[in-house]
Length: 301
Length: 241
Image (cartoon, rainbow over all chains, first blue to last red; front, side):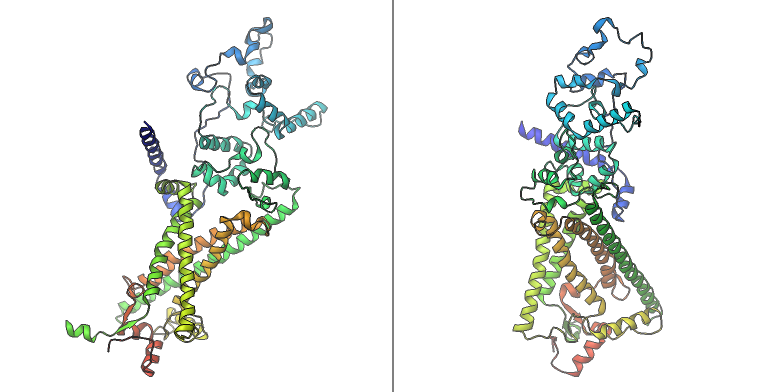
C-alpha cells in the first residue's frame, strides 16, 4: 500500500514535470541566454474572493462544504427579516466581502481571529476607520486593510493542502497587495526553494511574519526571533540580512537598511558592467580571431 | 608506419596530475553549474524539471556543495603540487616557462591584436604558455577563491553574520551569481572557442587530455619555447630521442 502511494506521488510529479516542460521552447531559450524572469509557479486563481453567487459544486468540495448556509449567514432568516432585505434594495449591490461581519468566523476560529485583532492589518484598519469617522481621509476600497474574506475564500477554501501548496497560495494571496514584496521573496533563496523547488523546510510569508498577526519585521530584535525559528544559531547580525531587496520594499524610516541597499545596488551595477565589458571584449576578440585565422587558412598560408 | 612514429617527436606539456585535475574540474564545473543554475533560475520550468530529475531541492543543494568541495579540493591539490614543484623539484615559478604573467605577455598581447587587425602577418612568438592560456588559468584560479568565499558565506550565513554585518550575505549572493554567469559564459563561450574551435586548432586540442604535443605544433604555437629548447639541451621536455 505504501509503495502504491509512493508510485502515485512519482506519477503526479512526472505529470507536473510534463506540464512544466510544456511551457514551450521560449522558456528554454530564455533560460539558456540567462534572462531572469520570475513567474509564480501556480497561476490558477485558487483564492478568488467570494461574490454573492456561490458555485455549489465548488462549495461542496471546499473545507466549509459540510456547513449549512445558516451557520455563517444567520441574519438571512433572523429578526423577521428575509434575505435579500427588501427594505434595502442596494443590499445586493454591496461588496459582499467588505460588508460581511467577520466576527462570526471567530466562533470556529477563535485563535486566528484573536491573532488578527492584535496584528498589523487590524491596526491599520482601525486607523483607516478612525480617519473615515473624523472625515480627514477616506480610504478607497482597494487600499482598505484586509479582513478574513480578503485573503480567505469563505466558500471555496480548500482543506488538507500540503505545506508547500499552502505556501505557494499564500505567496500569491499576500502578493495581491504586497506586489514588490512578493517579487523580492520569489527572487530570494526562501522563495526559490519554497515556492519553486517545493522545499518544505523553507520559509513562507507567515513563517516569518506570523500567521494572521502579519507583523512588520522592521525591528531587528523582532526579525531575529523570526529568523531563529529555523536558523537556531542566528545572532543579531543575521537579522541584518535583507530578504525583501526590492527598492520599494524597504521603509523610508530605515536609513541604515536603505544605505545598505544602495551600496549593494551600486556594487551590483559596477560588477555587471565590468562583466559585460570583459566578456564583450573577449567575445569580440575571439570572433575577429576566428575570421583572421579563417582568412589565413583560405589564403593557404 | 613504424618510421613515422619513430620520427614523430613528442613533447610533454602537461603532467598526469595536471591532466587529471583538468578532467575533474571539467566534470565538477559542469555539475556545479547545472545544480547552481537550477537553483538560481528555479522560477523557470526547465530548471525546476532538472531539479526534480535530481531529486528535489535538498539533493540539488547537496550536490552543489559536493561539487564545490570537489572543485576546491582540486585547487588545494594544485597548490600542494606548486609547493612540491618549487621546493622538491626545485622548479622556477616565475621563469619564461611559468604560468605567471610577465612583461613579455603584454607585448605578445599587443602583437596579437596587431595580428588580428592585419598589421602583422604571423602570431607573436609565444613561450610555453600563451597569454590566453595564462588568462584562463588565472581566471579560474582567482575565480575559485572568490566563488569559494562567497559560497561559504551562503553556506554558513549564521556563522559569518556573527562578526560581519548582515548585508555582506546579500553582497555574497550578488557576487556569487554574477561571477557564476561570468565563469559560465567565459568557459563555455570563450575558453572552449579559443582552445578548441578556432580554425587553427579545430576540431579540438587534445594536448590537455593526452599531455603530448608534436614538434610541428611546438614550432607553430610555441616558437618562443621551441627556440629556447634548441638553444640549450637541458629543456623541460622529455623527448623520445
